[in-house]
Length: 360
Image (tube, rainbow, N blue to C red; front, side):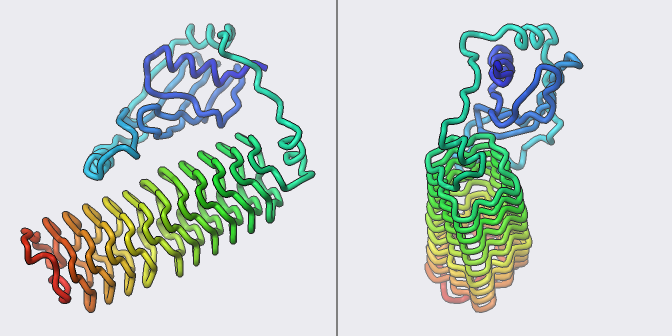
């Protein structure tokens, strides 16, 4: 069967828009609603409403911009603050163009290849060893895969809702766009895995290994991450709101633009972490070890930094207004342009290399 995904992709290319079709959804020639569109300029994803039967296609998306991971912190901050609502841009497609594209495949459009023997055996639940397999778009919801070997497997846009992957080997796996909501990842190895745009809402990642993992805009809301390891991970604009992270390790992790609303970061090891432009308002950070961390442009409004280790931390242009810093150590901290707990801006100067006393 000819892939209509490629047909719709050609339409988008013909309109000269920087959007391409995610290969996550199988379309039919009648209706194409709920398709996920990917912006070729920034990698941002939005839901499209493409209805062939209604002879109209509407693409809703944020304005094109450069890739998120190539932006400077100030550019990402500006982009976030100026982002338009989901329905701010609507682009209509010609019904005739849709009809022609859906009935006249191009030379580049070929039938989707059948799964290989190893993939077929895995999908038939005959084995849990499928290292390096191409399982893109596979429906694996509620599947029992405890201890499965999926090292370097391609699982992009797959459905892993409520799947049991306890102790599974997902090292280097490509999970971009996968639905892993409520999945059991206890003790799983996701080191070096790609988890961009993955939905991990309410998933259990207790004791999971995310060392050197890579993600853009992953959803980790209300995820259980007790004692998980994120050392060296690069997580851009990811959402950790209401996640449980007790005992987790974020040492030397990149967490630029991360959202940590209602997260208790108390006594975590976050030495050398990069939290530029991160959202940490009212965060509980009592006794957290942030030695050598970067918190430029971070929002720490009302945060509890009691007895925190902030030695050699870069807080340039960060917001500490209303923060509690009793007993916190700021030796060697840099705070140029920082909004201090009393609401005043620190003008900056050589003396801002920091004393043991917390800023007022």
